[in-house]
Length: 439
Ligand SMILES: [Zn+2]
Image (cartoon, rainbow, N blue to C red):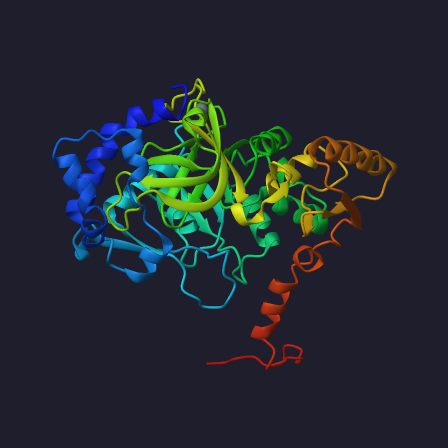
């Protein structure tokens, strides 16, 4: 396929019957799609222009119809409830976007999460999962998907007090886990390098790293693969949908055929639609789910769709996710994304890829870096300066920190140590073993 119009053509029939199905199957969509369904049922063909006029599911719709309003199945078929992590709202306990899954929805998500190319992982092999489990869908879904194959999922609930980075590494090592599922292997590796002076990427038993939850450019993903020597699969997931973008055998991320993807961009015109790739806000329609089906849902994520052939086993378009749309920095008519800054640091030996970006308005950016003090790192700073010049004209000031000092509390894993202390804070046992329990 060459462009958006071609892609739409391949999905036209599926979309058309899905819309009729939704309009007849769920209370919410019955109202939303009444006119659309009438048009289709009276024989009108959905073309791209018609499709663009169809109303979308909004976050407000979800809130107003929480939790059952969008359900397109019997209540007895619900098997899952999830909430988005709500990165746009930081207040505690505020209502997030919620979604339901039927048993069939879950089964489809499990299939999407296991790449066909992940061979050689057998029953009884271990997979360490370092993702949040509470409310969001990725941790639990990878867990169940692997478990169904007989692979032993080890639940290292990211953010839980038992699941320090050190513990993740210990278990990867002692269980000789073949699979690591995490959101940012570079951060995990950095912290282990800092604390134990050992390189996670050198673990001989580890074969596959599956990543979800953090935006990585194709360049960065490839670099992780080269540096680690492991096969690295990048997923794009949202709690509202489960896994949406899945890694192909060539390492690219494709939209899974369970979904239809569009790009929302104020510049999208007929001419744009004929281009071989499109960038902007990613908009998703799920074509199969019954729990909480979404139609033309604005994800708030910025990305790009590529329509040209990848040459792999998948026939859907490739996607690249750049990060949250709200994190974008405007540079005249260009947009800079978190992944652009990730790429500035790609392939450097003495500068950590884990950095902090402080956007002070659109006129000034602060880039805070972790470096290992050495002459080589000074040379790398020159490389970074050069890369910045070819990226943007916005002045970027660099501040350097010693390794581990930029995010001191994270690298020292203080949270885990404190939480362990809380358990014993009201009872201090200073006896020297003279207290022996006898029965
Ligand atoms: Zn591919």
